[in-house]
Length: 314
Image 1: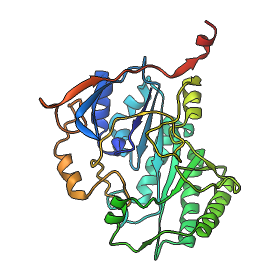
Image 2: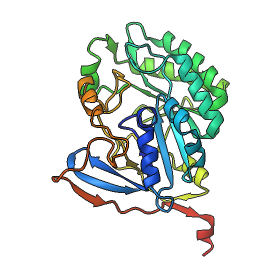
Image 3: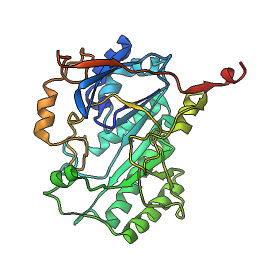
């Protein structure tokens, strides 16, 4: 199985102690976000887990506290690392860009550039963040990160209800099709000159004529490369139709990311996040809270999805 860690929160930034405690224990518990009293027990052993996909804006704490643990991990992994051009109004608690750049480079030097995916995501338009702004700062970031990654993933902002509510104070705009095409074409040109592959994330917009293909953030090709075998897994039916990701198990929880990004779809609001933070125990099998008498724990059936070369010879 593939573990997504996590689309719902930034585990490397805020909960790496918990993650490595659970890895040592060999299992964790995760609540069903649609029914909080349904809990799945997830094994974390190399026999059933084939790859971890980490999603982060700032894995500095994971590097500082768990560098040795990362290097000793028996299970393959890679990072989806978001570096955007936005200020503290839009991304209030993401570190300054120099710190983010340094962290990206340190992690790449530690684990190798093939395990580093840069996300420029989501692309937002406001009264001050326009075509020229994105062209300028995409190039600035790309030149910094290109030696340390092979791929960049882009997507335009999706207007979820939570996103619209959280961004009420900002005069954001929904760019036209022409604007999206023009910007995509320019970003592709910059990325190509720097040797970066540019793909999209869950975009309805077809940019293949420009040279930008639909990407797969949970990527069976990369996972097969890291694991040394064929990946026997289907498209994730729980994601949007436009999403190319294959099946995975997400071990995070909504309303727990403390970056405070206004465009985030995984947080309801800041007060809920602060309340949840008080319930975190790095020694608990649950990311937040404890198991109660009303909870039902079900052991998740799991097996490896990698067909090794030696398996083909049997």
